[in-house]
Image 1 (tube, rainbow, N blue to C red):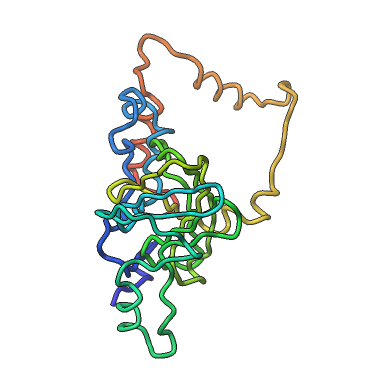
Image 2 (image 1 turned 180 degrees about the horizontal axis):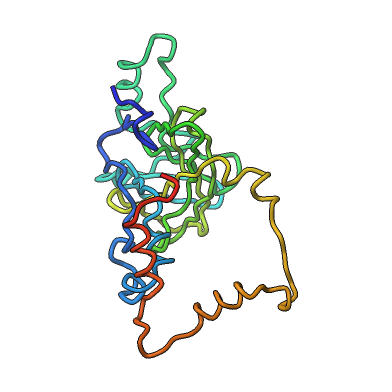
Length: 252
């Protein structure tokens, strides 16, 4: 049995046909511009922050403005969501493994939400994070999204809530198929300490609007940021950030 206390996050794969979660790639699947991948630490840090999760299988979806349809790989038949559908064979496998009082509780694979053009997809995962850590679910950072859909973002306190990891999306076009590939990231899950989004943290802000309020240290820091002489190499900020990362976490 996996000890969730030994990891920041533990993914439990209930649907194992698809690709398992993986650490997000700083190069954005190799799709980042070469200059950004080499010199822009801000972009690569965001791209590699978290884990990618994937659809459990190739999916083709269609919204006709009222109803949502889906098609399985190798099939030409569209199936309507009324309002949900199980992953093929999942209900039986779940009931075989679950305690008697939880039979019939297999999470649906696809669910048409009450709002028009809204769909919920189960990633096939249950998840547990370390105490006081939550997960932000969002679209993958800095890689092209599949056309026709837009993902919602959400923060779940996964140290307290143990259950299915869902992705909620909105169709942005109708009457045209949307393809979600099983080998392309569907969402990016990012770990957040609960203090990072607590009201006490977010309310502790200051807006300073007069330049003369900047201190001498502020002006010196700004000068280091904007001055570029012949001896300063390209990507100096990125190189410094990488050196600091190799030195280890100051809070570890």
